[in-house]
Image (cartoon, rainbow, N blue to C red):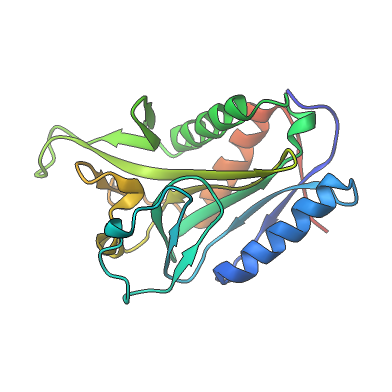
Amino acid sequence: MSDSRTIQVRRSNDLVPYGDAVREMEARVAAIHAENAPELVWLLEHPPLYTAGTSAQETDLLSPNRFPVFKSGRGGQYTYHGPGQRVAYVMLDLRHHGHDLRCYVKNLEAWMIDALAHLDVRGETRDDRIGIWVERDSDSSLVPGEDKICAIGVRVRRWVSFHGAAINVTPDLEHFSGIVPCGVSQHGVTSLEALGKHASMKFVDHALTTSFEKIFGVTLVDEN
């Protein structure tokens, strides 16, 4: 549970270059730590790219020349970002949110699961791998199993968080074939669209903001 500090939300409708987003996050994190700016939840999409987290293995980058590749300071391995994927970057001062990184990650997971429930999708966590997963429909023509619908990767600097989570809405899922997503080869990747859930990005944003307020116990205000 948070105190009454103001947390802003920003929604970017245009594609935001990844490098620009990282620079913006780093500047905002420094300002939040210095108490010169409010905390921020930033919802956006990126042009197509692969990012390598701090645990990324080079052998998991299967198509190195397909899209730009950025080394990221977030936790995790390789992931894909692109149009149709809603990325949620969360810049919170964890000194005011329990001062507990493990609890923060659990809250991120609970946030994504609750938002997916608003979108009529049952998301679940797994003890042996990160992210949010959905079981394949028993009537599906695909091999029985489960697929990742949401990736999570965070970084914390002086107790201020950044990076965050990404939910697949309508991305080109074939683009994930250029990597081993998050180092997991025995399971697939899916999206709301592939699951037959046709939601606008505006509705996804509404689910994300509503669920964030519920899970983190705060009120989001639009950034000026």
